[in-house]
Length: 124
Image 1 (tube, rainbow, N blue to C red):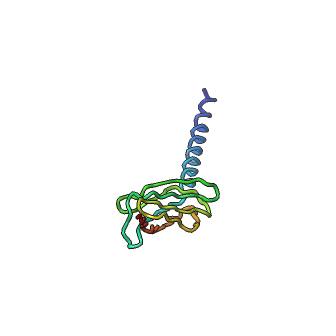
Image 2 (cartoon, rainbow, N blue to C red; image 1 turned 90 degrees about the vertical axis):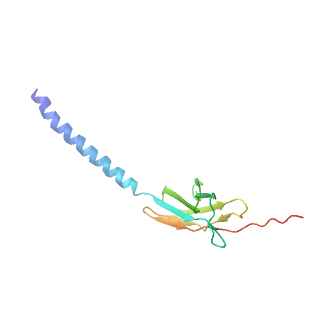
Image 3 (cartoon, helix red, strand yellow; image 1 turned 120 degrees about the vertical axis):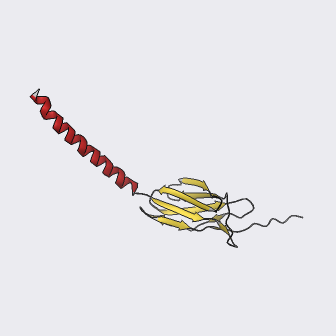
């Protein structure tokens, strides 16, 4: 029985150290991303709800899409750091809009106010 009484405190200490390391790992990994937010507006400054907003990492080709809310706002949380992201916005009755490439770094909150040009379709 003495053998088990010596193992129990050691096992408890190892379990506590493992728990601290896991919590530290989770905390560090939680800071390894950034956020990209913005508002979709037309050329007059009016917000465009329900616009399709796509965030693309041009280096990898990975893309994520969101729909702007009633206030034209969109948000991409937990974006992995990269140097060449772009945003593409499409909405019915509007020309699509594409941002210039931009970087997202860990802890960043990158804002982008996308403006969409109104499309005028002329027919005979």
